[in-house]
Each structure stands twice: as structure tokens, then as C-alpha cells.
Image (tube, rainbow, N blue to C red):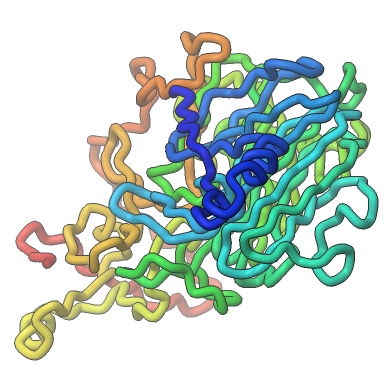
Length: 461
Ligand SMILES: [Cu+2]
């Protein structure tokens, strides 16, 4: 993975340049140059060039916003603007975000840092930024109408506060929130501890990402902003599996994963092969006596959970939301359940009337993972992703924790698929299968129901 900081200057409009070039230049000089990111790749960690040192985080399919140090203040420049995000190859969305991406860049500071954030609004409507979870002066809390006037289109507002407590936070608009969050406006904020902290361990790898969701009709690009419950795109940092990068770690690394939820529902995040501890929330580090081991932790709306584990099992370990509909994309929820229905002969009859008609799911939906079906342009495949053993039949909120013996420290590159030691992969039993002995029934058993076995001559279209 490479740092791909595509620096470009933000033009404040030709009118300003023509009317008062001198004034515009002076105004520009006072602002840190906004940095925009075009790449959807996971950027390498941004080691701090100045200020107190810390081990930086890695933002999954995202990046950290560079800053400028001015008179002892860390100055950032966020630009709220329309962006085009590739959510998966072949599927782009027209979103709103910050500095070229949705989500916006991660902001990383150190406990005690004085921070100044310039927020330029290039959206067609007003906005504001709320610094979710932070201790700050009330007037810097970013709730338009309540603690400040909204930032009109074309204007720049300044937020100033001291990062008072270490932890994981988020930022998002508090102006026309329903629309702006549905459009993808949010980002993460990490405040590192200024000295060794009894409840915040040093780790070898520190990852962060946001859970987000969209309702984008197959074939279209702009989210439907009025949707309350029926989302069809379940994303991590506005990417969907298999377009979410894997978390690549070295065997026995201590790994921290910070996950924030800014969707409209909860997500039970599940990790295979390891136990983890929830070591922090947006409220701060969890006291050691209050931690317990888990393999799934539910993350409610507006919450952050910080998971920590020792990656001491080699392999490719699935990590995903355990709501099975959230590991699917562009799902039509009105597809009837056809399991067990024998519709031989029916399809051809219907196809005389509706040429594109197809029947799904007579034996379950797994067939669809490998099925070639005609979808409108710019549609997320419903489930996809191929592994070394075939289709994964997953989409949406899914990725892989890759634990490797030979991964170098600080190397975040993808090591490829795991090569399993001989004799450690589930295998087919080839002996005789004895006939089942019927247990004595307590009550009348329902008659066995039959599902037609897969027939290689069955054509799917
Ligand atoms: Cu979920």
C-alpha cells in the first residue's frame, strides 16, 4: 500500500480571484492548504512529522488528514464537498464527504493538543461539524441553531479547542443531519494519550473504520436520503466487500480495531479465530475490571467500540457484521422464498411472457454467488468475492483479518491468501454413509420434505 496524497489546491472561485487578488491571497495564506485524497486504497499510517510522537492509526480504505503546526496549534482544513466514491469496482456513488472522500479523513491528535480546524463548505446547502464525544467549549460543539449559526455554502468557519481526553471519536454534520449523514458525511477522530496510560495499551497495529449504510437503487448513483430502515448498501468506510481492504497483521501482534457506527441500526461485529476485549468506548477507556472476552460485540447507533486482541492464530479470519442481511448488497427484499418449490417447466412458460424472468433460490441463494445475471449498469453485485476455494457468497460488511508469520513490522501490504499447513483444511468424507436409525418419536414427526437436488443440466440465465 502506498501513500497517495494527491495534493491539489482548492480554488475559491474565479470571482474572488478577479475582484481582489491581493485580499484572496492574504485570506488563502491564513488557511492551511486543503489536502484532497483521490485514492480509495488504505493509506499508509501518517507518522507525525511534528508535535508529540505516537503510533498512528490505519484507516481502512481511508487516510489521515495532514496538518500544519502554527504557533503551537495544530491546524487542519476540512472541506465539505460532493465526492464520487468507488464503493466497489463497477459501482460508484455520488456522495457528500470531506476532502475528496466519504468518509472524511481521520483526524489524529495528542491529548492536550491545541487544535484549530477550518471547515470550508462547498456543499449546495449549509452545514456544521459536530465533534462527537469530545470535551470542548459549548460553542465549539457544532450543533447549528443551538451552539452556532450554520456554515453557509461558500463560507469557512473555524473550530478551536484543546483535545482534552484520549480516545476514539467521530465527526459529522449537525445541520440537515438526516440528509448529510445519509449522503456519507462523517469521519473519525483519534486522540492519542500524551504519556503511557494505565488503560490504553501500546499496540503493534491500530486500525479504524466507520460503519455506514446507503439506499442506492440498482442502476443509480445517488443515495435516497429519506430512507429510514430499508438500506441496501452496508458499508465500512463507504466500501463493500470484496472492495474492503483486509487487515494485515504479523503473527502475535497486539492489534487494536476501532469501529464507529453512524448508520441507522446496530451491528454485531464478529471476529473469527480469536477472542478480543472491548477496551474502550466513545466514553473513554474501559476499566480493566469491567472488560470481558468476546467474539462478537454489538455496536449501537452513535457508538464506538475499541477491540483489542493478540493475533496469535495464523490464517485468513473472517470479520463481519453478524446480521446476515448486512453481508449482502443491493438486495431485493421482496424476492419470495423458493426453497423446496419445484418449478420445473414453469420458467420457460413465464419467459415466453417475460423474457428476462428468472427464478432464484430453489435450493437456497448460494447459486447466485456464481451466477451470471444481467444487472443494470452501476449496481453492486448482491454477493460476491472469491477466495482460494471459490465464491465467498458475501458482500457488504465483511473483510478478512490476515495473520501471517512473515508479515514485517509496519508492513500493511496484503500477503495474499493463506497457505494452509497440510492436513488442516476441512475435507470430504469418502467412506460409506450408514443409513440413519430413526429415534423413537415423542410426537408425530412431520413428513420429510424434499428439496430437488442440483442437476447439472438445469440452466440458469
Ligand atoms: Cu450489520
